Length: 360
Image (tube, rainbow, N blue to C red; front, side, top):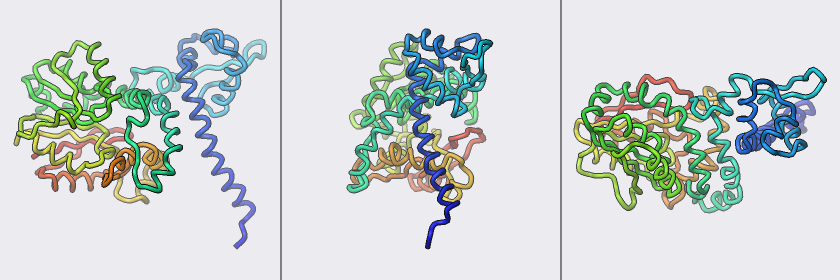
């Protein structure tokens, strides 16, 4: 069968449009790392290349080529000044996504760790041959910082006022004093945030990433919280005496090598009246459904190969759920199999995550 010339052109365009996205993503990483977006966001007007380069003490020729890429991609704004000079600026929306770290729409976390994520390509051929992936610490300290910058802006804005009140009576319980564990705590932002808001309760964050735990220790030292600590569960495991009132797990179960075992451990840790707040990627049951209803499905499957599934298969026998591997149906079945008695999806709207209350 011979190729259709028109379809060949279209397919070539499709493939190279993916390469454009990858290259432009690298330029987004540089814009964040070099402070170019922050400089544009701070300016009262559009800046020329020379002005932008001068603010950051950068070479104008390099800044010009970067700005041309970003404007061509529609990420920054282009205009002509009074004398015909090229000027660049950020739209109000771009300021939030690219340069406002405390806004829930801030999106630079994944771009922060882009070099580490793409660096996994050096090791992935061996993973395809052996079946063994690499854990999150293979991405180094910057990988942990990238995860932190990805998730904490939304958490800071919505965890206390929106998510916790969605669990009936939980806020009052935490005000009175409860024992809480945060599984896969990462850099500790959620645990510290809850500890500062609920001083009568005690919190322990658990993670196996030494880089994340080091970052959590730094954040804890800079906080006012004295009712939270952080541990590696391989050395200091989750209690198994039904002593906890609440367990949280934010965006981590699909990354685990043995998620079913972890669910059973969570069940053994909880009081009969306790609850587990499970937050994980909003996935559907089949590949076809994910592709039809999630415009970012190709991104998520690719990130899974480079990060999530790789982590979940970083030991022999790893479950390998992957980024879109824990839809509600599977999460419910696994929770019931682990000994939980009820599973309820919470009415919380989020572009990426689904929220569940799981009880003994």
